[in-house]
Image 1 (tube, rainbow over the protein chains, first blue to last red):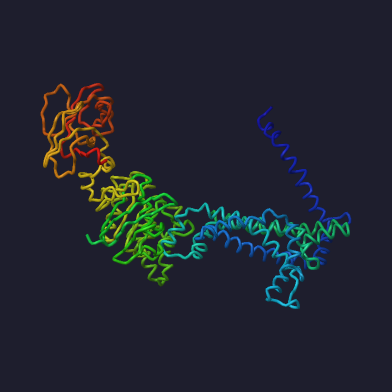
Image 2: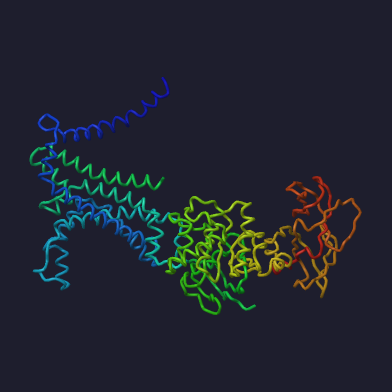
Length: 273
Length: 359
């Protein structure tokens, strides 16, 4: 048997799985988005934008704000892990920050629901401590709740990547900056961050993709409109059996994540040149 | 000597291990001092303690009479050149050299002028916009030096700055650095494990062993008058023989031994005791002659041995000579064959003798 045929045979099982389980359903969803009553058209998209335009904008705002917060949080935590001068505080933080990684999204939603509600734990604590009166409390179970949930859940993941990248930098690069008189925040921003930027970007993009796929958090925390695109898709299928509009929404969501990935890839190509 | 940089009873601990044990050292202004020792002797720890990266468990560090012991690294007026150079890969040469000036809020035109001056000093004029990744090892080393010099430090600290360069470049960079140091008149402390590097660069050499100073002296002092067997061996006198001594006020009488003749050597102020002693000498300070040749006693120590191996490293023949159960290395102009009976003539002033009790 010729060599190249043998090679092809070896790769066939893996290829078949990718094609059958991933590419075919993807293609069928995408083509389904453009199918209106047996003909090709943009009807599903028109309907999707008309009914769920607000949800799309809401999704973009939520995901972008969460990403900014996740970025800042992970820079702060991994920066302290790398530059912190109190070994005990560093050890405690290192032990603590990874916990949310092991908590499923649905549990995060559940926990925050009891914590952020109008008569939830957070408000009771604030009233107990005398900072608020019962009439001043309000519920955070809306867009703010989603952002809190995403940030809480995704920051450790990005921190894990970022702290690893920072730890692998040559320590003497930090010491040489200290030797010249740079403060810790300056070392973080001017010396460390530029060198770990690619890792931060990868972490944030993976975070964006994850947030774009989470259904449980918006369902549990934000039981109103506008809501996130994932919830709208589920609603369209479960309530109406309307796969056309759901597929169109899926296509829009894929376009959003692809845009982020494309911007990132273009940036890295430019940097490497 | 009036010290500019003074280190007083400095101790450094890593956990329970005492890495530096009571170091006392005084460096004059404008002096170039090399800290020399093998790996783990504490030389880099001492340099980092001076720089302020390793806190002292006890003792003090003073510069020009001011106490620096508790000051952070950037308040000591010192600049450290790291072994790995530690250049920042995302900044170009100008930004690397100018970073210290930026931190000091030097006005931009002054900073630019200073960076240009430093680049001219180090021959880096054409590389200002290059990133460290686009430079050769020698150029990176100069950028690291330039970054340290740009802030006009009182003291320049060099942590094995040449160990990452290949052998040929290292020889020229040695001279460049010491010439630059003399031209700028800057006080410098240089860490190295390379004896020759320390000898040619430094005004004074500090030999460290096991966290303590073994000897301090000019290159000629530590080379010609080692104060211990360790220093003698470190300075290249690796050959070792056992002797029996009778010491008088100004002579050392070496008793006839299984491998050596009786000899009387001038004492030369050495502090020695009668009894068992060890003697060290270098492979190139010996005259080698065949045992059957007529003997011309020239006043030194004469040893008898058998050639065990001969090699040619270039210039001279290198012989391994067996003296009883010890072996020594001897260089000679001519070749002696394996198994030849030979005599080794070691001049009295090239023989470093230490009483056994003291080492």
